[in-house]
Amino acid sequence: MSEDERTNQHGAETRSLLPVVSSRATEDNTGEATSDSSRQAPRNAPKRTPGKLAEFEVVRRLGMGGMAEVFLAKKRGAQGTYKLLVLKRILPEHMSSRRFRVMFAEEAQLATRLNHPNIVQVYDFQDYGDDGQLLSMEYVDGPDLRALSRAANNQGKKISPHVAAYIVGEVAKGLHYADERKDERGAPLDIDHSDACPLKVILG
Image (cartoon, rainbow, N blue to C red; front, top):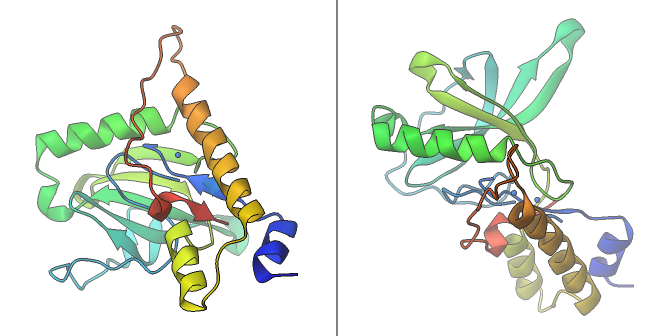
């Protein structure tokens, strides 16, 4: 039995983070992905990672795009409990931009309305003043589909057809749900996920 087959037997999930959306398959409308995989920040990326954002303890930066950055963080509870989650915020140099803030708020409004097993769950969206607007969401511990494909290629292997079909099917479920989602008045949310790609499909 191949490694891919063993992975599928053990119930690998695919997620997508649409502005939301994860097989579990995940994508969002600013192009940020939330998996802890080999994403490279731009060369001019700030080297300093904040130790804390609002009530969240930052573990490390997961990625950065042209508009926003994402962090792995902990939210502490009573008796030493904590929850690992992902924080997303507008880059500090763009926090004063009204256009970026409006775009980010619109993303959050859509993301918080989605609830599907194959879509990364968004927990909360708050404005924390100097720390910026923070979108907190589920952390999916696993590689993205691009990383998996590259790892297979580096070993001279291919993802087996039935595993590939399973992943595509799970991604399609999440995308279909987002396509069909309506607001409280029954009007379509019209979510655009045209930039869906392997980087945004998280295998957890």
